[in-house]
Every structure is written in C-alpha cells, then in structure tokens.
Length: 232
Image (cartoon, rainbow, N blue to C red; front, side, top):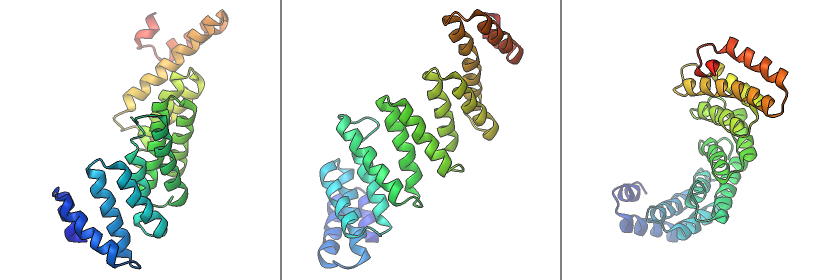
C-alpha cells in the first residue's frame, strides 16, 4: 500500500487505484483492505468524483467501524459535500452530519476537533449564528488547548457582536484577551470589546433610555479614552 500512496501523491491515480483494488478484492479480512478502501476513496476524491469517493469511504466505515481509517473516512465524506460552500443546503446538511458522526463516534481521533470546527464554520456560513456559537463553544469545551481554539473563541465573540448580544460578546472577547495574549487576533479581539461597549450605549439610546446611554458612554470614555469613539 505504501507504493500505492506514493503513486497517488504523484498524481498517478490510475496506478494507485489498480493496486488498491487488488487488495480490496483479495484481502477480505485484513486491515490492509480498510486502508485500500481509503486509498480508493482518496483517489476518487482527488478527481472530484465525490459520489464514488463517498461509496468507498462508506464501505470502509460499514465493514471496519473500529479501524483507525474509519474516522478519516468520515472526515473525508464531510469534506466531499463542501459544506462551507455547498451546491445546496442538502449537501451542507450531509457534510455537517458526517462530521457530527465523526465527533460522536471518534472523539479521541485527531480529526474530531477539525470536524467540530468545520461544523461551526458551516453553520455560520448557513446563517445559523446560534448553532455556530454552540458548536464553537462545544469545540472549546472539549479541546481548549487545540491550535484552532483562539480562532474559535474569537469567532464566538465576533458572532455574538453581530447578533447584538453585546454583553455576551464582551464576555467572550474578554475571555479571548485573557487566554491568548500573544495571538495574532488579539488586537482584533480588543476591537470587538471596544465596539461591544460602544454599541451597548447605542442600544440604550435607541430604546430612549437616555440615562443608561449616558452612563454607558461615560464608562466607555473612562475605559477606552484613546478610542476614536470616545470623541464622538
């Protein structure tokens, strides 16, 4: 199988498929067959033969559910639907479902956090802000030390701000600033904190609660005296 993988990486998909098909045909009860099924799926995935790739991956999952190749197959099935920019909402839902199955059945696999993060991104792209925030928070609860954790925390704050949930956005941005002081997104997170504080005053003004707006903006000036907003 090592030769077949090298062939696939070199773009020799026909040769790689031929080698994998021999293993699938002749080794019905061996782990090598699971690997060969994954390789067949990968070869067809590389050629954008999405349906055929999914068929190979699903056969692997059905025949070898405990194989270490099974979570990889689930991840690839999710990717094959391109849930961040799908043809239609059915494809998005199918992609998210595949990733959810990966997270539920293989939480300890290295692809699980990537799947959970992808779920959040797909829901955000769909316009399901509440679902996206819940998915990012689930990611943070399960994998707080993952490399994508800062981006997840930032996305929570950004999404909450866009929903006009200013107090929740303030909490999320504050958590980001405390947890990730050296992250490249730190300055942007500080900007979210400033904007959330300002918009709380705007909301109070819109609601004609003038005393509250005055108090909030006075607090804003004290907290962020150098912000351009402080002179408005």
